[in-house]
Image 1 (spheres, chains in turn brown, yellow):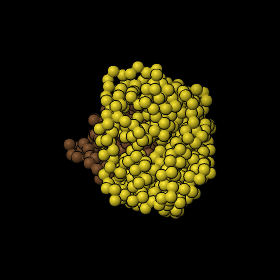
Image 2 (cartoon, helix red, strand yellow):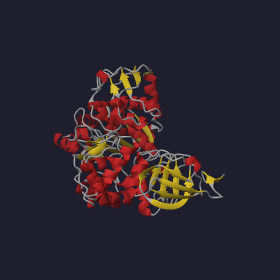
Image 3 (cartoon, chains in turn brown, red):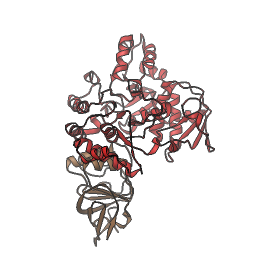
Amino acid sequence: MKIQGRSIYHGNVRGEALVTSQAISFFGGIDPETGIVVERGHNLEGQSIAGKVLIFPTGKGSTVGSYTLYRLRHNGYAPLAILNAECETITAVGCIIAEIPCVDKLPIDEIHTGDRISVDGEWIVIEKSTTSQVNGEPR
Amino acid sequence: MFLTPEEMDLLSGSQGRATQKAMQILVALGEIYGAKRMIPVTSAQIAGVSYDNLGEAGLQFLAELAEGGGRVRVPTTLNPAGMDIENWRALGIPPDFAEGQERVLNAYSRMGVTLTCTCTPYLTGNLPKYGEHLAWSESSAVCYANSVIGARTNREGGPSALAASLTGRTPEYGIHLPENRIPNLTFQVEARLVDSSDFGALGKVIGEQIAATKSIPFIQGVESATLEELKSFCASLATYGGSALFHMQGITPDASTCIPPGEQLTINQSDLEKAYTSLTDAAGDEVDFISLGCPHLSLGEIERISHLLEGKHVKREFWVTTARATKLLADRLGYTQIIEAAGAKFAADTCCVVAPIKGRFTAMATDSAKACYYAAAKNKFKTIFLPVEKVVQQALI
């Protein structure tokens, strides 16, 4: 399946989807030294976002979160790309300064954890995985 | 969005990597929020200064911008740092933290940022005038600039305010536009407002009412308010409500042109009392840290503290936080000497919100509703929220 979104930061990458239906706060919600989601009760809690195509509806929390994305990149634990339904300031600025490809205006419910995703500018290609999951849980 | 030839030029990188990155940030924000064009700004106020929040990577980002030729194009001032730049040892700041903090300040300095290190730029040389467009971060100052002064700025984050500074522009959206500055919820205040902490409590009560809807409040029933009271109110409203703008009848410049919104809520004395109670979870004898100056103290507030402490001796760690420029005047007027003779410590350039003090204290007493929020969330302190005179009493027993 090929979908067109809106490119927030341009890039060309291919990787595995990690999907959550919950918003993400990068500051305080993700450990910049490990890439692991640490927000208590988040449905990705304990999972690593490093090297994944990270897919979530929108960002939340402190504007310092932009710097957290930059720290993740610097430490080698950044996501490969970020896909959103609606990108907001914190994620957008974070992706630009950390040079992480980012696309929004996407129907993210169509994508499941484990799917193979190709990002090329504003275009997304989804290859379904037979073992895909939602929110890190088997479907 | 429409970009002028000069803006296209900045975006293409012909003026260096740093201004290119800055334009990329601003164009992306403009696209997200549907801005039609860029507008010039007259000043910037940058958050993201404490080494505690930035870490080594954030520092590297700033250093890269400085090395990539990033230079401010408009007067640009800086938020508080994680320490008193001159007196950090006496405040118990570790030397490796101080070293990191100095590198952050150095990167900002190389870009031409004025190292004011205060959350109250309007008290120390960065005072906008009515109607000017700004790119400010520091939520309390954003609220003050928009509401009390009538200037126009969105709630910027550190990187977007810096991007505006390096290009002299910001995308025109949000409350830069007059149609987005119209109030939509009336608050009738029927509580007595005596101390500036009462205004902090009021900011919490109203802020919590508008946090979800992001309404712009129109506030009636406040007879008078000093600069310091408005400073306290703004900090609290921004912390608890995420608010960037309010109108206060008879007090803020745009209030007289507003039509009071029909939907109305009443704030009474018991609402204020509940706010005080909700920010007090420590017993008096647990208090091991007193902090005054969130937002940074004005000279008048320092004078008052000096009167309250004259000839007394504090029995707990007691910080008085303010801008360096204000402290220099307090030195000259003798207030500093009186306060330090009582055993309290000046912490200029910094505050209890951004200094690396997690784990150092159990319970903090303060007259700032904003400081209570961050003490609990960031530093896991218990808090006591009181008017300034009673906070000082807590230090003496």
